[in-house]
Length: 319
Image 1 (tube, rainbow, N blue to C red):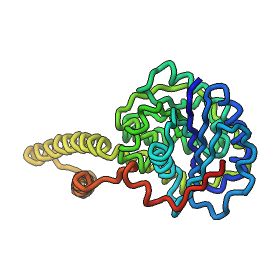
Image 2: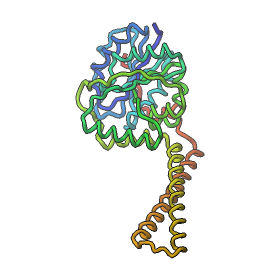
Image 3: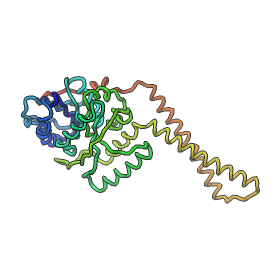
Image 4: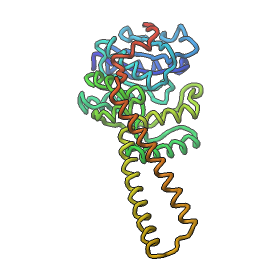
């Protein structure tokens, strides 16, 4: 049995789901830990937490806090702030589980993550690898297309989300990653922190409907891709180099044809000229973006461990 475990749940208007989750979390973890800390990061929900939210927790060794943010930041940044808060304010916090508030990350699967952490040692963060999703067909099609785009741009397949467990010794390393501010899982991969996975099916939402619309989902996906901006830049650079070689080969052929007196169709010549112009514009634009990225690297970075306090309005200790 572990002395302490902590569960982090970012939430926006999911109070009813949380009310159902809390007793399940306590029930499934009571045999694994003597002390259980539950931290809800309230991402500036319009409604306040119900007064009876923590009454379902029965163990005297369970603590329950609500970290209220000053403004809505999105669940990825809520995770970054929550992890930084846990590292600074809860000691000992033990291993930290990150899970969503809607019930699709099932409390009954937390022990599977914990057992994998025990097997892999203190250095490896364990993520749930999704075998099956419960969303609509439209979402699944969009997600499939996004995975293809992600693979093309980053060279990496998407296998993991938020549901994970961070060993106690790794938490302080995670919260110093600047990219954590944009996307938790992608930041861990980019930082080359050891990762292992457990195959877990995504559960059904336990109450209500998702608050995220398609625009927010697209933005969430773009944030994950943005974490790999430097690697994407290199891949685009190689692609543009290959395109330049093709253009050089074609132009050389056109030049030799002109010297040899071979007539070239005017339509082909026009199309080639337009392609060259498009390539030059794209190359110039990419060069500007690359310089902006490199300039950003020289600027002071946002570090969650240092800067998280600016976004916390208050902390409510419920139990």
